[in-house]
Image (cartoon, rainbow, N blue to C red; front, side, top):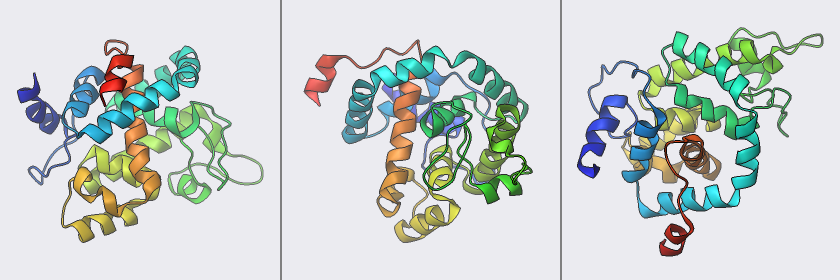
Length: 223
């Protein structure tokens, strides 16, 4: 199984090591293939983070999972339309716990935690009378457009996740400073929050994949 991991990840566009420059957007693939194998390819510290994150946040993740059916139905339908991996639905879990009314301390709002100007650039109405960032359908469509544009720019989903959190400029800067397009190589030049953002996403994807058991307590003890 482990010997197949690099092949699977490269074919899905989720491995951070550069491949052909004209890569196309990956087809939708089962989360158990994409992220369960992704964890096998990362280092011990990442696996340790994922294991402890799931353990420490088990109750809150369970609550979100219980009310995830309707939001995921909306998200999946829109992401499939834009040929995006439906696993990206878990980004809304770590951004807002799938809450349409979620608001951050810096003014990001909605299930995808879009800033006002970013939302306007993506075609949403954000003014004194309306804020379409809280509209699940419209904000998910905007997020899909943004994620699609980021992937066209970075051609790697781990870098897309980092750029969604920090913005494209810090990711480009990290690529320049590290002379690499490999997330695990350039991550030390990213803001700490963005490094953790990618790890939280991987951990959440691991948790929500019902075919992939949550790491057991004995695994935690060995890390």
